Length: 317
Image (tube, rainbow, N blue to C red; front, top):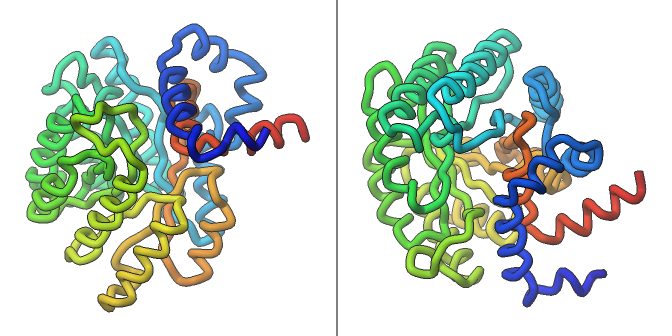
């Protein structure tokens, strides 16, 4: 079975899982079956807001911050977008009431971007106002490259408003060629960035096709972020990337309070705990909700070796 996960097979597996993330019949079966629930429990906090709160409290007790994400994307109506936003308003109130070290993350397609850019900006802006009023923060997630520019434009406008200044940040994907220029602009605007490698299937015209080039770009972009005066998040489970960040920060005299490492719930818990023991700030992305299937498949696409891990634990239980 281990031959399934040889390095040369990774691009094929990645493409297969990304394709499966769009498979509607498999999604319907997975999200409504006991088998699906057993498989997702490693990476999904649960189905309800209370499940997310329990996980956030647990990771806080370990000295780890949390980012809460109500899973869902590509709503089909304005009323659906408002219902999705209502969950985030409840999340922000619950975070404040429980005094959690946590914030929230959302997708603009979940806020109605594909119905109207103005609708998505209005709804996301209202969530950012609520975050600002409660002393929290909202991260606007990045989706596939066709939405990169509009996402950047909306986040910059939200950040420019007095009622939401500093309360909204963005995600930048290292595999896109354009990301260096985007980060330069975001730093100039004073906007907080979460840097990740990227989890969508993109054409070679817009994204680095080779992992080595993505890694090289990730390191370059992380150094740009570390050298800025803004508090950023570096999202990776790759120990080589983490070592590069540590080395650069040490060489430049950048303290561990100036940035945070970000990781996914259920992935490399050992590494999360080790970083906390070493004095680094760590934040875990905690997804929850019934619409978990696309997220789950993208996690497998990012790291196909997770399939082997899931299989071992599934048949052990």
